[in-house]
Image (cartoon, rainbow, N blue to C red; front, side):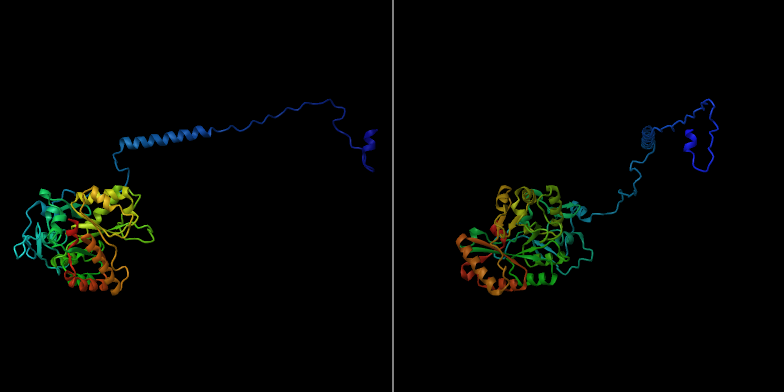
Length: 402
């Protein structure tokens, strides 16, 4: 009865074909899950296989360079690859364009010790090969015994019997004992060698007692330094050092820097020392920060002393510890009275030179530092003419360092 009521109107009642039949149990189908792969074990096995193959390659395949590109170079060649070192080991030939004479003046008074160069041809071009003796005299220094060969080139060293570059290359001059009571004034002109024509002009004009400091970056240092020696000037090498505003103010390549290892700075020093020869000492170029850092500066001063050189501080930084380090390492030393041409005008330069005379009269000696500006060269040349009549004498800076 209930089934008839639930049926839609107008449609006959649908009968259940299974009605009245006993329940039949259908067989159940059991679906199995797919089997999970052991990913971790597979990766471990692949790693073990790769390591095993690598071990087999290393153990049984003879390739010590690990497959890197390589080249075979004949290092047993008999070619003379270092003529300077070989010449130093043998007797150098007599140089036809330079004469070494004893350091005795025409009046019989001894003017210094060591060999003195009396004639060197400054016109010898850099591009032409030179005989080994001439090359040692013009490019690497006046004495082959004072040369040490390095990967960067020849650098100064102390020679046999304690002979030093300072004692050999410094210009022979009077000292404090023979100055006749006059104040001694030394002038160092810096920045030479960068401009060849300007450098040669300065060498020709300046009195021979003026000390010349060469920058290490000139392209014609062979010619300009040879000309300086021929005119009787003593020479310094300028060493670029870190200023406080580095790198905005960059002294140049191979600048000595604070915070670097001593080995790194010494490698730079050797590169700089090999630019030319025949200098008796070095001086700073800039370097207010570096010269104030004793831990970074002391290995450099110690190396300078070990190689028999002197050191000049230009006096532009009151924080420099150069005087203390030079004394501790027994390095010949002098400190400049600042830059006399900081204001590049003739009146300002002459005023600074007058201040230098007053300082020398008070202390017995003074050192002035000037750049190689044409106006500075002319002012110094004119000022030096009447210096002795004013009670002072112009001497090379090495005389004050001694």
